[in-house]
Length: 242
Image 1: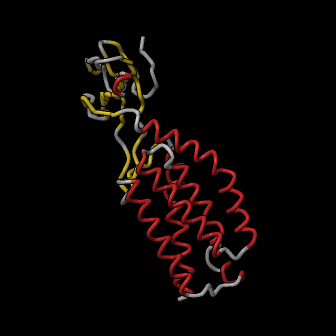
Image 2 (image 1 turned 120 degrees about the vertical axis):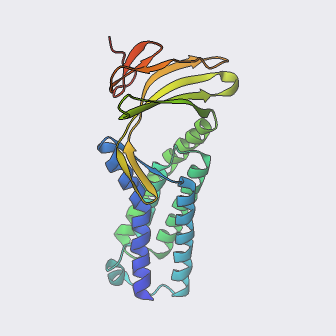
Image 3 (image 1 turned 180 degrees about the vertical axis):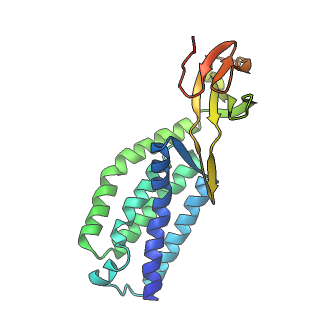
């Protein structure tokens, strides 16, 4: 039982940290890491954390500091819980809400069962310092996620199909909206519940008040897209090719 609890603590630490760390590494390499469903993933983390909490209660907390060092200092769990929240803070209402709940699950678990003082103190200080900024960022993220409705109007591939663009209508109701053209370069792979792909580049934005404008899409080679007969580089933001 004790071995299983130690392994469970390590597993929780890895599961909470895998998306934030993977997203950071992917971003530094010019890629993006996406999940099949952020809400489902966070609900899974919540369920596993709750199960681990119940298991620790039933074992009557058998570890002292030296024994916990052999596994994962549970006091550090709020740190990766906060990292998971940070990574999901702009992903929509459902994802943000479940990420917040998952963080508080790690906080309760860490403060209840953390035995190593430095780990417990670190978890408390890091999560406490970021709590208010993250709450504010999450409110902004929810407000913006509810402020518009993205609809893919058209998808056009380059001649050699190494790249494609999506015409996206970001409809914000009475406020009008934006017509976006996003360029996607092929490349990447699936890794189970995660997908690694090259980050899209928004090459064109047109604001409108009532009705979304139409745009004519064409290609001039693999690196240049023609939008209303004007040339834009697919690897640079808002850059017209003279």
